Length: 455
Image (tube, rainbow, N blue to C red; front, top):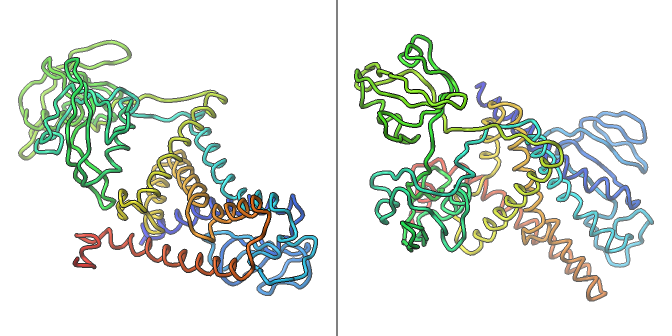
């Protein structure tokens, strides 16, 4: 019950914030150009209470001009209502503060400011995170040199080897492990080309990816040379008795390099046998003998471990620059995913609707403030970009494109055609919303959509 309440609370906080910022962008620009804002609603559904013309009231909106700043029944999203918005009657008399009385350029800016504010929020939040400093696995920014290959994995079947340096994945150049993860993750259950550098030679390998998790993320079965860092030592454990400490980085065991995905296997197979741990501590290399204690059928030393990480922290202007670079990369990824949905390259399982957003929001909330801010930044950026590029008539980007065409041809689209467009847009939006909600539930079924549709 507490998990359900926590999930709902996290969803309301996150989704309310990103939609508030979006609608505030429309509100601000409309006010700037003298468009009357009839309502700014915090939530949807029936009005509970609000302020209009400095008068507080419950339920019924007071008569007269002015903006009704209201709180509505369901506090999930915000919206603004502009005078003349969605009204396409021919020869309708226009008041000076009517939206349709403004120039195309002004209406273009009003439509676009919502998405701009979402993108600005993402940049600002990531910059704040960069200034505060976060612990980041070091391997993500390293050259993509393979350090581990899972037995029976697509990588092993394709003939990839330890120490191969990955140069290209599916035709895209990759410089870091982050690039590799994105390229492989976005190509589940597909045959892709992998270009590697091996012993000074460049080789091309065909690899048939698999898919993992309910989101059907592409999986190849290789990983980087990830060193293991001790996060916590259990009191009274073999690790504590041997002198291991939190923050130690395990470089080798018995003189052989052992990476993150091998570490547990080595320890579990060595119950009762002394192992020589080579660890890095405060810039020094130490050799510490550790004997795993037998617990059941496996050996354990009593630590929790993570990939070797370092704190990434910036001053103000470098933090903004790093944020811009990160968000630009994320914009490219979002556009690629949307394009892939129409070309069939991106499976529908990688879409996330309200249920997925709620799950991720609750997970981020439990991790703490900075992870929550990071998730809000990701979601805000996605909302902003999707609103700009989604080819649906009610989306901001589509309306901006229409305004651009009207300006180029110096002629307005007829009111009847505009009404047809908007009707189609709302139908498509309702269908899309229903699909992503259903998709969230279907992904949790054993066989996904095949559990519902047998063909």
